[in-house]
Image 1 (cartoon, rainbow over the protein chains, first blue to last red):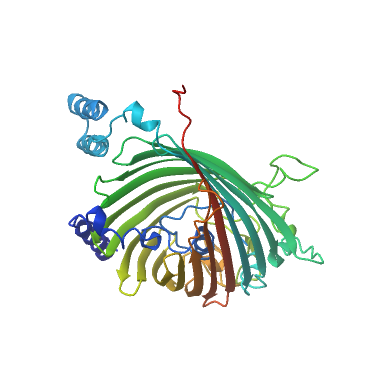
Image 2: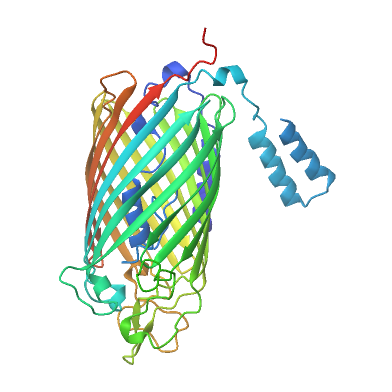
Length: 69
Length: 423
């Protein structure tokens, strides 16, 4: 658990050293598929949340149901 | 700036503990660039309204239903219909309304009271949420708050949430933090003609002579955070996580648990739970209009569940408006210390469940998708924004399988604000 925490802490500080990209250089970054966010969609990620014990970061539960079945 | 300076000065004058001083300095760093937008530039921003429709079908098969103690059918179909309405105005303020209804058909639900119907027991899950977002200045700092509610025959959930989102002026870094709190009532009866109020917990029929659980409410508090950054012209990466704490009734009242001596009880879990998932994502725009998306996730749960997951998606832009995608995901988790299969629990166990969602397994998800950015309309004001569908097959190594099909489309309406100075 400590090793994983250290890994993510390292990745976080690594992201601090990113370069600045000028607006005319952003043709690839502006593609909608390049946006960081939920991979999949809310419905699929809700399935993960119910059928697996683990919680998904960034999941915006489109509905707050028990999903117990 | 004045508000941020006041926060900093107050913290130092009052000699607050160092942790609170650090928190107040953090607030200063976040709000340091916040300032009011000059009124005249707000008036000219276009007003944009988007309406989105989402549909989904989920078909599941399995043989470890928790309703019958870890054995029995898990056959389930969910037909989901949802909508989202987003209205942007005045310097990117927005109001968001989303809701929908899920029709659930479950064979295992029949087995709560062994009342088998000709078709499997049906339930409906209705939900609605609203959020209001205010933008502060052109460096794109947003504050949002919202609430809503969802209801099933045996479940009522009411959330409240606030969040802060900030993007740097050069759009190379983005940060968000939010808190949400759910108030869930697990009592049944509010939709029943005989009760019309939350009346009781639904136990299995043969176990209803005992009040097994003395709590009706479940409370969940989530601290969400995320950070993303542009690494270079082709690569973006992000880190996100949740610290989730639940307390109250965490057991499911209609789940059976069988013990080694043949006796059975209602599922019983601790009254608190802490979950800490964290995810690292990276999206790379490779040559030939391909985008490679990866996601690495870890989750810790004080029920004893430790999970790891890897997600990979390949997107091929067929042309400027159409993209085809293929994806797969692998997940592995260890079992909760409170889980045992059917008939394996010791009689003197303090907590017990046979819910296979809390067992040890691996999951595999494989799928295809297609997305089209249509952006067409008969007039410049109306656009058909996008069409998207995804199909995935989901397999869990305890034998549960599922098919997931989702569809999404939306329309947009853009117009200029009315001028106040008409001559």
